[in-house]
Length: 122
Image (cartoon, rainbow, N blue to C red; front, side):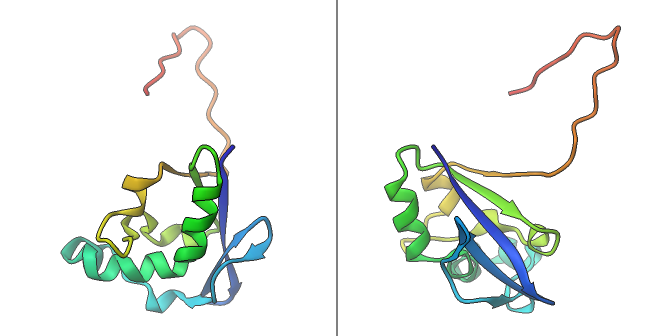
């Protein structure tokens, strides 16, 4: 199994995380979330804001209850602009280091050209 965390715009410029249609955190204004340059400059401080916006302890509890502890991020267009991978746990560890994390994308894959070999990169 895996845990799918849907991050949706609930109002213009406001994001909220959901697990199975149930909100796990208060809505967060997009403007309150740090951008990539700020996160790269001080991930330990500003990454905690992302962790809280993802659900904080409620997210950790849900991940620990999942047998695979795999987090799938399903972001809408507004949420997809946030560097969620910088979310920082209270003990100064990145969320994605403790729990495997993948972003889901809603884009069809391009077909491989018929005469060419199909190469996989893992």
